[in-house]
Amino acid sequence: MSISNALISLRRLVKLALPRSLYGRALLIIVTPLILLQVITAWIFYDRHWDTITWRLASALAGDIQHVLWEIKERPEMADVIFEQAHENMNLQFILQKGEILPNELPHNNGLLDRLLAKALDERVRRPFLIDSSSFKEEVIIDFQLADAVLTVVAPGKRLFSSTTYIFITWMVGTSLILFAVASIFMRNQVRPIKRLADAVDSFGKGRDPGREFKPGGASEVRTAANAFNRMMNRIRRQIRQRTDMLSGVSHDLKTPLTRMKLQLALMEDSPDSEALKSNLQEMEKMIEGYLTFAKGEGGEPSVEYDMSDMLSTLAKNWRSGGVNIDCHVEGHLIADVKPQALRRCVDNLISNANRYAETIWLSGGIRGDVLEIVVDDDGPGIPENEREKAFRPFYRIDESRNTKTGGTGLGLSISRDVARVHGGEIYLEESPYGGLRARIRLPL
Image (cartoon, rainbow, N blue to C red; front, side, top):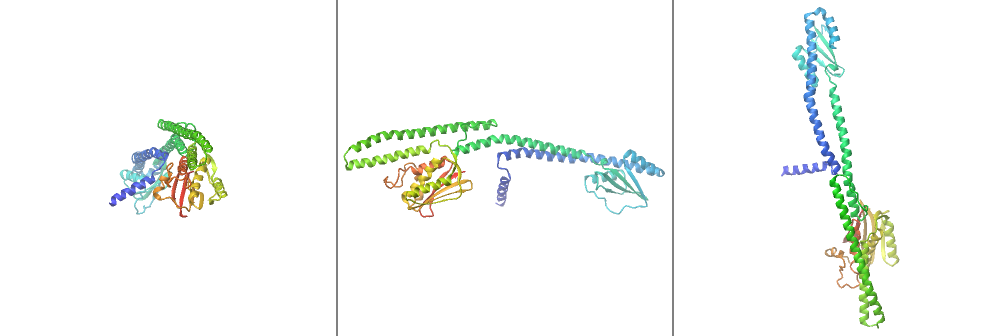
């Protein structure tokens, strides 16, 4: 069980460490093999090339020193001449210190150069020695113990150190950076059309116009997705336009016979039957107005940058002037891209519903992260939790009597939710802290 938990935790850590964007993941796919290639190449170079070259240079230096020591042993009286010739021909400097003894300490093999040079000297020279390679790029100092003296050999750094190492690393890193830059530019150009497509889809989902025709770009798969989005957007626009035109046409056509019926009733004598017919006609007119309002909610009003704080304050002022007890609290300036008339109708419907059943209404608005939030509270009887979702259905009324004096046509909440969803948002019905119903509108910015 503990192993399973450890694997789950490791998987979560890996997911957190990995980039979330397509651009980051694509670069990771490109960079990871590049880094592995660099590591493998560097290992092969250091383990094979540098090791081999350094060993050959160390062996050559040890051979030259061995030759000079052999010449001194054979012709000790010619030591100065031999040293001078070695300096001219081998680029080595020899210093003989008679009567000196090397300190009794082990040689310091601090790196690959020291280890390989010590190995070569053990095989070739076979005398006690000490190596000082602290400044190996400039020179390497080797002290040998002779029978009655210490021989110091100063070898230039180029006898043991090859600059091809740094040249190779520079070229390797430099070309990698160039390839990484080219890959970054290429991937950014490939990801940009996807980002543009995502922005267009998001704008269309929020009721904003992404342009009459989103221009496809990028790879063939992205172009296919963009063309599919264009076709889908045009189909949705046609369906909305057809539905709106149909509702508007039906509602308009119904007004003609209703007008004739009203004229006929006006010519009739007053009676209980005529009064009942007039009441039914008034209810039908309200329903037709609801149809028209519902149709307008799906119209083609463009989105504009609008000051919602001014709209909420004006709505509260208008209702207050009509004798409604409404309190308004707006947090700063609420600037957002909205359909002003549609959203005004949405909030106005919510206030109208609250006013029908409550004595006091509280209207508030503010920014919550990346969401614009508008809240309408009341102190009325509220709506039972199991009825809140049903209340959004067109023509659904909790008051089953369908009495126009106690309720409307049942389209108010439907229109409000429709407007909110056109903006890419939603309306939630909750219990108000004031005892009644809370209607919360949340719209993405």
